[in-house]
Image (cartoon, rainbow, N blue to C red):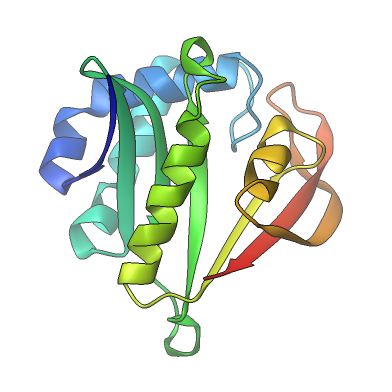
Length: 171
């Protein structure tokens, strides 16, 4: 049975090895989420550890999907922003373990992230994804619209510059 939960900062710290394993598996499977190969497990754990202060301050929420207790997916909702941007939130790092894909976990994480943003008074969500990637179709399904495409915006895990699609959704 799969469940989605918001991790407290303490729970996130306790889950660092599992979160690192998830991130590592996704990058090794080709996910373009900010890392290039070679990508070692300690780098993945450092990413999550570096994000703990934002969880502690409330500037970010971390959601995880668990299947029989194992973390198989995650996403983050960035709630920080300048005073003129506190109506928006950013969805980042939507991850689903390669072994758990095609079961609706990405969509379930997105819908939960939207609910969290709405509960915090956010009326606009933004995100970015590799253009023409499976993520782009995932984000279109709950109503995200393309804001624009930037060529050569980010490098793939193999270090090749690729286009990035920026998307938004009004809540």
